Structures are given as C-alpha cells and as structure tokens.
Length: 265
Image 1 (spheres, one colour):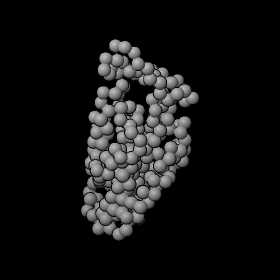
Image 2 (cartoon, rainbow, N blue to C red):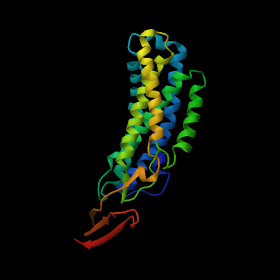
Image 3 (cartoon, rainbow, N blue to C red):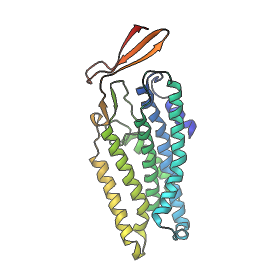
Image 4 (spheres, rainbow, N blue to C red):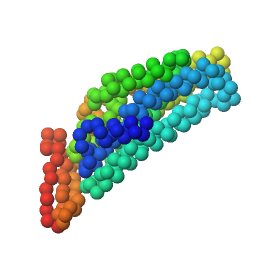
C-alpha cells in the first residue's frame, strides 16, 4: 500500500516540487489507493466476522466499542501510510518559500476513515463470501467516477493547486462532519439486525446516523468555488544564490496565479 500510495504522488500528474501549495495538493493523491483498499478490506473483514458468528462471542462488550476498535486498528496503519507519503513530499519541498498546508493532510485522512466506515457498513449489512470483492470494485467505481471530480462533495483529491487558492475551511468542516456521521452509523448499524429488545435504542441510533450521513452528503457543497477559496495576498521570499526570490499571491481568481520577482540581497 505504501508503494501504491507513493506512486500516485510521485509518478502521476505534473511536477509539484518546489511549491508548498502544489506539494500539499499532490500529497492528497496518496489517499486514492488507500480509500479503495479500505472499502474492500473493511467489507471483507466485517462480512467474515458476521458470517462466522464471532460477533456473538464479543457480545460481552457494547457493540459500538467492538466496531470502533476494529475501525481504529485499520485507520491507524492506513493513516500511517498516508502520513508517511505526506512526509516524503514535504522533505522533497523543504527550502521552498512558505510552509506545508496541514489542512490537506486532514483532508486525505478523513477520506480514508470515511472509506473504512463505508466498507464496514457494507460488510455488516450484506455479509456474504463475495462482499469484499464487490465492495472493492464498487469503491473503485465510487472514488474514481463519482467522487473523483472537484464538483463532487467528497472529492478524493485536490487537483487544482496554485499560490492564490487553498482548500476551503467550509468544505473541510463538512467533510469531517460526514466522516464522523459515517463512523457513528458504522458503529451502530449492527444493532439494526439484532432481535434483542434491549438494543432498540441502539437500533434507532443506527438508522438515524445512516440517514443523517446521506442527508449530509446530499447537502454538502459540491463545486469548485466551495472546495477551494482565495487566499489573501502576501509575499513569500526565499534566498537563492545571493538573491531573494519572492512570490506574490493575487487577491482574486482573475489575477495571475503566480507573480515572481527577484531582488538583490
């Protein structure tokens, strides 16, 4: 997974080295293979546990704790792969004017967690021998077609990157809200099929979180103007061979995306 994620960053798209906005956006491409793998892997694991009856053996613990533990275990190592790729991109761009944009790392991590929650949800609702394979193919179609463009609410990567724009705080907040609701739905969906009357409250919560996730995705802003926002003008300078190289960010989208000037030390 590390090789696949790194290949998406370093061998796909135009050269991004030397610019923090471009580097931060390019790092989000590492999430694409991780999200596809997360859906299939989580669906297979949840389906296997449900078909084997192991979930009954774990009934001594609250179901939401069991499900959350499973998701956390997978989110830790998949998130670590994503952060390692992000760290590699930052190392390559060290010395460029400005600094890394941490919001992009959170953008990718939230996508990975959402994919895991979606996979576990599918595996619990439709447990079968082929659930993992079907979920992996469906995840590939979902994240390659439905959520691949900048006009989709859960865009899996930030394609456009320039010094005058950045990831919208509003879009990131929506994305985190959708992820939290998806995790909550995943942790409580098992109770929907339970015949235990004591699980009635948890079953109601599972249905509520599932519907809330769909509503939040449908209401989530989904176009370029909501995904990206213009940054304020500021000058970023770095010294190179006795000279100061400065990049000026424009005030509006109609301005030139990058204006560079040189001045003597």
